[in-house]
Length: 123
Image: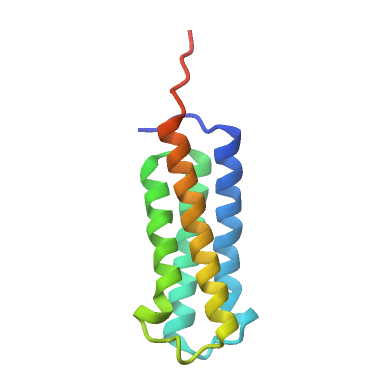
Protein backbone atom coordinates (compact mmCIF):
# COMPACT_ATOMS: atom_id res chain seq x y z
CA UNK A 1 0.00 0.00 0.00
CA UNK A 2 1.55 3.29 -1.05
CA UNK A 3 0.58 6.90 -0.70
CA UNK A 4 2.06 10.22 -1.59
CA UNK A 5 4.67 11.45 0.88
CA UNK A 6 4.10 14.54 2.97
CA UNK A 7 6.88 17.09 3.42
CA UNK A 8 7.63 16.01 7.02
CA UNK A 9 7.96 12.38 6.07
CA UNK A 10 10.28 13.15 3.17
CA UNK A 11 12.51 15.23 5.43
CA UNK A 12 12.65 12.39 7.95
CA UNK A 13 13.64 9.93 5.21
CA UNK A 14 16.43 12.26 4.06
CA UNK A 15 17.71 12.44 7.65
CA UNK A 16 17.60 8.64 7.91
CA UNK A 17 19.51 8.42 4.62
CA UNK A 18 22.21 10.69 6.06
CA UNK A 19 22.31 8.60 9.26
CA UNK A 20 22.71 5.44 7.16
CA UNK A 21 25.62 7.02 5.30
CA UNK A 22 27.13 8.12 8.62
CA UNK A 23 26.89 4.53 9.86
CA UNK A 24 28.74 3.32 6.78
CA UNK A 25 31.59 5.74 7.55
CA UNK A 26 31.87 5.04 11.30
CA UNK A 27 34.51 2.28 11.02
CA UNK A 28 36.88 4.77 9.38
CA UNK A 29 35.96 7.67 11.63
CA UNK A 30 36.44 5.67 14.84
CA UNK A 31 39.21 3.40 13.56
CA UNK A 32 37.71 -0.05 13.83
CA UNK A 33 38.00 -1.19 10.22
CA UNK A 34 40.34 -3.98 11.40
CA UNK A 35 37.56 -5.43 13.58
CA UNK A 36 35.97 -7.41 10.78
CA UNK A 37 32.68 -8.36 12.43
CA UNK A 38 32.05 -4.83 13.71
CA UNK A 39 32.90 -3.02 10.49
CA UNK A 40 30.95 -5.41 8.25
CA UNK A 41 27.93 -5.26 10.55
CA UNK A 42 27.88 -1.46 10.47
CA UNK A 43 28.46 -1.28 6.72
CA UNK A 44 25.61 -3.69 5.96
CA UNK A 45 23.18 -2.08 8.43
CA UNK A 46 24.04 1.43 7.19
CA UNK A 47 23.60 0.37 3.58
CA UNK A 48 20.25 -1.27 4.33
CA UNK A 49 19.01 1.82 6.21
CA UNK A 50 20.12 4.00 3.29
CA UNK A 51 18.38 1.79 0.72
CA UNK A 52 15.17 1.67 2.79
CA UNK A 53 15.26 5.47 3.08
CA UNK A 54 15.72 5.90 -0.66
CA UNK A 55 12.87 3.49 -1.32
CA UNK A 56 10.67 5.41 1.13
CA UNK A 57 11.51 8.66 -0.66
CA UNK A 58 10.47 7.17 -3.98
CA UNK A 59 7.25 5.55 -2.80
CA UNK A 60 6.13 5.37 0.82
CA UNK A 61 5.27 1.97 2.20
CA UNK A 62 4.89 1.21 5.87
CA UNK A 63 7.17 -1.83 5.75
CA UNK A 64 10.14 0.42 4.94
CA UNK A 65 9.69 2.20 8.25
CA UNK A 66 9.42 -1.07 10.14
CA UNK A 67 12.65 -2.26 8.47
CA UNK A 68 14.39 0.99 9.47
CA UNK A 69 13.09 0.68 13.03
CA UNK A 70 14.36 -2.91 13.34
CA UNK A 71 17.72 -2.04 11.77
CA UNK A 72 18.11 0.91 14.14
CA UNK A 73 17.45 -1.38 17.11
CA UNK A 74 19.98 -3.84 15.73
CA UNK A 75 22.65 -1.14 15.29
CA UNK A 76 22.11 0.09 18.85
CA UNK A 77 22.31 -3.43 20.31
CA UNK A 78 24.77 -5.16 17.96
CA UNK A 79 27.98 -4.26 19.83
CA UNK A 80 26.77 -6.36 22.75
CA UNK A 81 24.89 -8.98 20.73
CA UNK A 82 27.99 -9.70 18.62
CA UNK A 83 30.46 -9.09 21.49
CA UNK A 84 32.51 -6.45 19.74
CA UNK A 85 31.94 -4.03 22.61
CA UNK A 86 35.32 -5.19 23.94
CA UNK A 87 37.22 -4.49 20.72
CA UNK A 88 36.14 -0.96 19.80
CA UNK A 89 36.38 2.30 21.72
CA UNK A 90 33.76 3.61 24.11
CA UNK A 91 33.27 6.60 21.81
CA UNK A 92 32.51 4.29 18.88
CA UNK A 93 30.05 2.34 21.05
CA UNK A 94 28.27 5.53 22.06
CA UNK A 95 28.16 6.72 18.44
CA UNK A 96 26.70 3.43 17.20
CA UNK A 97 24.13 3.39 19.99
CA UNK A 98 23.16 7.01 19.34
CA UNK A 99 22.90 6.56 15.57
CA UNK A 100 20.84 3.40 15.98
CA UNK A 101 18.47 5.02 18.45
CA UNK A 102 18.09 8.08 16.19
CA UNK A 103 17.04 5.82 13.33
CA UNK A 104 14.58 4.06 15.65
CA UNK A 105 13.11 7.37 16.82
CA UNK A 106 12.72 8.73 13.29
CA UNK A 107 11.12 5.53 12.00
CA UNK A 108 8.75 5.54 14.99
CA UNK A 109 7.81 9.17 14.29
CA UNK A 110 7.04 8.32 10.67
CA UNK A 111 4.90 5.38 11.71
CA UNK A 112 3.09 7.58 14.21
CA UNK A 113 2.50 10.26 11.55
CA UNK A 114 1.15 7.63 9.16
CA UNK A 115 -1.35 6.32 11.68
CA UNK A 116 -2.33 9.73 13.06
CA UNK A 117 -2.75 11.59 9.77
CA UNK A 118 -6.08 11.04 8.01
CA UNK A 119 -5.77 10.10 4.34
CA UNK A 120 -6.03 12.91 1.83
CA UNK A 121 -9.21 12.84 -0.19
CA UNK A 122 -8.92 14.20 -3.71
CA UNK A 123 -11.83 14.90 -6.00
